[in-house]
Length: 298
Image 1 (tube, one colour):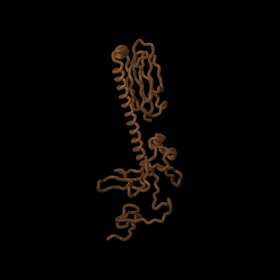
Image 2 (cartoon, rainbow, N blue to C red):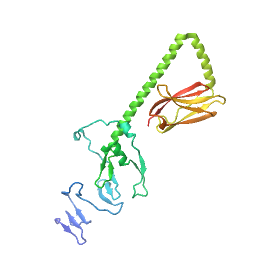
Image 3 (cartoon, helix red, strand yellow):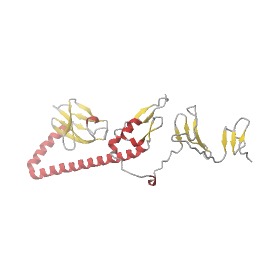
Image 4 (cartoon, one colour):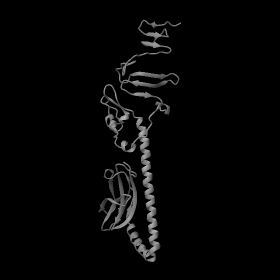
């Protein structure tokens, strides 16, 4: 039989055991009842070594640590965690407003905690997030602000969906415009007959002469957010050459005059244009060589 409370000669206290191996050892179930007020401590531990655990759970079934909180503030779980998210727990469910626009206002940063001289972390600044998503920021009793990072997963999902819808809409517009151009060419050819055919043959001959030594490549990367590079090859002899960027309405937005021979490139800065789909064309001696598409996501 076990004593109701066992105190050994070395000061260890045991409940449910006669041989406690630590200062306090309880074998069996325990219950702590607390009347602590708001932000009060029901149970607290003082720890002085940064790698010591304030709370430590070990599974004897699998023979390894599965959960602990260390002095430095790290929380470790072997298999992650679950947050209650059942619809029966929630009320006032609403759609997230302008998720893509608001997400673009956040700035991810690389940083170190002031008391950590070795490890870098990736994350957000709570004060910045609070300006955009005050719902996910909480100010603690010591005025330190904390972020519910998992809440931002929902924002990211909705932003991706919104962006994909924009891309799909722009792609449909481009496809329709390409069909309209083809129909217009066919109608011109049908209406004007031989004269147009003769003109087309002459233009095609000129184009072929230029295309023999002029090439426009796909921009890289595409889609892009910061900047993208357009590579090209120009003939050895020409009077003028340029790359022009247009919006989908055909409005000329940027022109890059080219002066080199052979291969070259231009860099398009994403900050100079709003997000969307654009067309860019290479002209050599006022002859259109090729036109391609690029997408700026931001």
